[in-house]
Amino acid sequence: MNQMSNIANPKRMILLTGATGYIGGRLLHALEANGHSVRCLVRNPVYAHPNDLKHTEVIQGDVLDRESLRNALRDVDTAYYLIHAMGSSESFEEHERQGAENFAAVARECGVRRIIYLGGLGSGDALSPHLQSRQNVGAILCESGVQTIEFRASIVIGSGSLSFEMVRALVSKLPIMITPRWVRRLAQPISIEDVLAYLMEALDMDSDEHCVYEIGGPDQVSYSGIMQEYARQRGLKRLIIPVPVLTPWLSSLWLRLITPVYARTGRKLIDSIRNDTVVHNQQALEDFKVKPRGIAEAIARAIENEDREFAETRWSDALSAQGTEPSWGGVRFGSRLVDSRVVQTCVPPSKAFRPIAEIGGNTGWYYGNGLWRIRGLIDLIFGGPGLRRGRRDPKYIKAGDTIDFWRVEEVVPDRLLRLQAEMKLPGRAWLQFEVKDHPQGSEIHQTAIFDPVGVFGLLYWYTLYPVHQLVFDGMLKAIVRTAEYQESG
Image 1: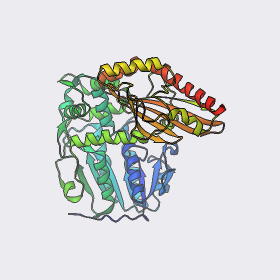
Image 2: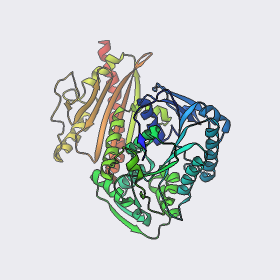
Image 3: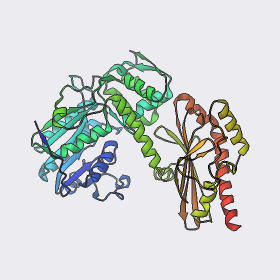
C-alpha cells in the first residue's frame, strides 16, 4: 500500500521525546548513525548524554508545560512521542492524557508534519488502565490534525527492557515458581532491534494518512513460555506452577519480594495482562521491510547485545555516574554483580600498569597466593584448568593469552587488562584493571564482575564475597607497592 524511501534527510529537524528512556535512548543513537538532525526534549538535561553525538541538541522541557513545547517543536518536521508515565506513583492516566493533548495542540500550531508514536498492543472491552491509556494517547495524537503513525507492540525483548529484565530476574532467582494465571496469557514478543527498525523506517513513509500498525514477532507465546526459553538459553531448569488464586495485586506483592527494583512499574505491567496481546492485523508486514525475529533469536540477541555493551562499559565511570557507593555484595548492573575499587599512586600509568601486565604465572597474584593455589586445586578436581597453564610470556600479554585459569579478553598497553575466568563457576566472571591519568601520577581501577546463573550462582558470589574482598583489596595494594618499588629501583 505505502511506498518506502530509504533516503535520509539530514537537514530536517526531528524531535525525540523519551530520549533518556530505554527505547528512546537506543533510537537516538540510530538516528545519529544515519546522520539525522535531532533535538531531544528532556525534563532534566543532567540525564541526557549528547557529548558524543554530533547531530543532537538537548532542550529542557516537559509535555505538561506548553510553553516549553513551543520551543522544542519549533521548525520540527517529524516528532517521536515515546513518553510514558507508568513509573509515576500518581495517576499516570491523567498525566498521559494531559501530556498528549498539550503535545498534539502545539505540534499542530508549529506545523509539524508527522508524529510517530509507540503504544501498547491489546484489544477487547476490558483493557487494563495501562493499555487503555496507551491507546487513548494514540487517539489524541491522531485527532490533532498532524499525521500520526502509531505502532502497537506487546513485550519488547532486549537487554534493559522492563519486561525482559523482569523475566530474567524471576528465572534467575526462582528454581520453582508458583505463578498467577496471567503467565498463561499469550503475547507476541518483538525484539528491540525490530522495534527500532519500524520506528526508523516510519520517518520516510510515503503517506499522509493516519496509520495504526500492530507489530510483533512471528511467535505467539505465553509469558511462562518466554521464561522457559530464557531458562533454556541460560542452561537453567525451571518448574513453573500456575495457580488461579494470585490476583494482580497479590502478584505485585510477590514481584516486590523477588524483584523490588521493578515493583512499581511491574505492578502496572502485570495489571495490563488481562487480555492476550497478539497481532490481529498484519498490515505492518506489507508496508514495512522489517522481518521480525522469533522469540528464541530475540532472547539470544538480547543476551549477546548485553555482553557486547558490557564489554564496552567503563565500570568505574558507571559506578561514579550512578552516585552509588559500593555496598556489601557489590553493585548490580542488569544481571551482573560488580565490585570495584580504586587506588592512587605516584607513578605514571606506564609504570603502574607494568605489574598488572605481569600478573599470574610465576609472578603469582600479589596477595593470598596460597588461597589462589587452593582455588586452582578445587578447579582441577571439578575438571577445570586450574593454575597449571601459567603464562605464555612472563612480561608480555596479548588478547587470547591464557593466564592460569583466566583468558585475556582485552588488553590496551599501559591502560587496560580484562580477564575472563575459565575456571568452573556457576556463572561467568571477569577481572578488570584500568589505569588512568592523575595529577599526582595515576589511578588504578580494579573491577570484579560476576554474571551468576541461578540460585547457586548467587550463593557462590555472596558466600565467597568476604574472601574476594580480602584477596582483591590486598592484590590491588600489593600492585601499587610493586609499581612504586620498581619505579624507585
